[in-house]
Amino acid sequence: MKISFDFDETLSELYFQKLAKALVIAGVDVYIVTSRCNRLDIFGKPVGNIDLWAVAKYVGITEDKVFFTEGAFKADTLSKLSMDIHFDDMSDEIYTIQLMTKCKGVNLK
Image (tube, rainbow, N blue to C red; front, side):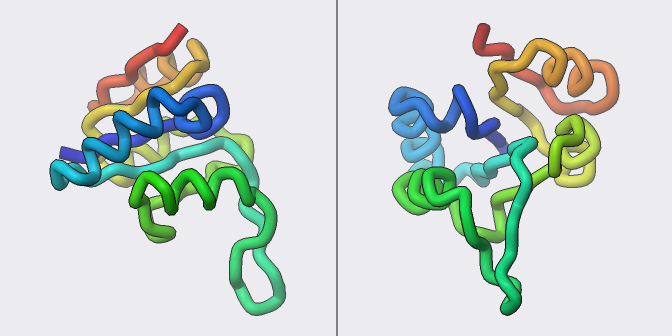
């Protein structure tokens, strides 16, 4: 099973960090799919998003399982990743996910 979390107002919250960490320990493929922008230095290493990278490390999500949509809706990325479940706090994201993918969007509001 593949489960993803939005970051802001979702995985940035301690409750969801604990949930994600438990899922990782249980062997579930856990991802971060965020509409944030990813900034890279001249060597291709991430800069900025310090809070996101710290939470990813704490939870046990590796860099290769973090996806930035650069402001675009997440549905396309989730579809490409064949994601099963995505947690998000934005109703418009959930609507688009439900409409355009086989992924189950879980609305947190």
